[in-house]
Image 1 (cartoon, rainbow, N blue to C red):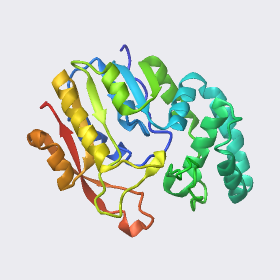
Image 2: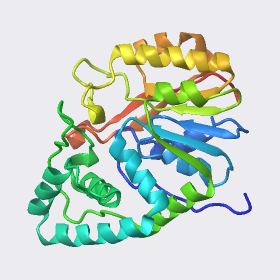
Image 3: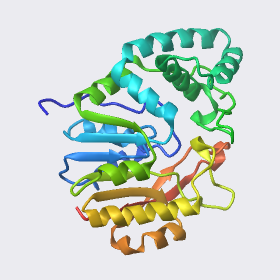
Image 4: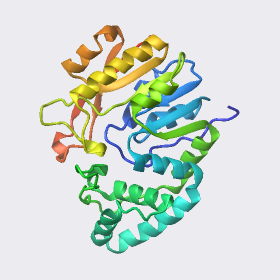
Length: 287
């Protein structure tokens, strides 16, 4: 790469975002790799961080179709997206509650262009409660409006920077289950970052999130199996998860490369409960 790409931040809020941990994670990233996989993409904070001064082929995927559509639009038509976001912002500030309800009710309709779909998701994400993306069992977005006085719905410069990075690197975007993308494409020497929905810290803490079904213990066990398969294949894998005994047991074979980190999460509805807690960074390699 001839020059450093611009610093870029996630253009959507996402549960479990990694912005505050980037400095810690960066120290654990393999020193050299040609291909990067992030199959639980979310806000993409680590991808953008790595892309500033590294050259690699990126395979970015998520099970959330609406989210992947946003990335594809940012990559291919960022100016069209900004134009629609500008209109949505103006309408929101005229009558926030009315516009939010209308936007949420229309979000799941089929007769939308890809640009409009992307703009609606970004606007809802930045104006809904705590920036959640949550759907009910029927797949309908059901998050209430957030209590914001002047929400920043979009940042044109940041969106253009994101588009530049996605276009400057060889980046591939997939609406795909993580198992399929890794089984089909990951190979020896690839760097794989896994940031799944976390194992709940308590019996009542499970966040079903953006698929409507949640990420169960069976899913966690399947992920641990795939982690080991990728290890056997020769991939370098870094995984984030909650600091629970269950997770430690699943990755007991990698105990020497498990690091505890403190992080503050903002999903809890009460600010007093948004306290620092421990998470795990698990690797199958040493730097």
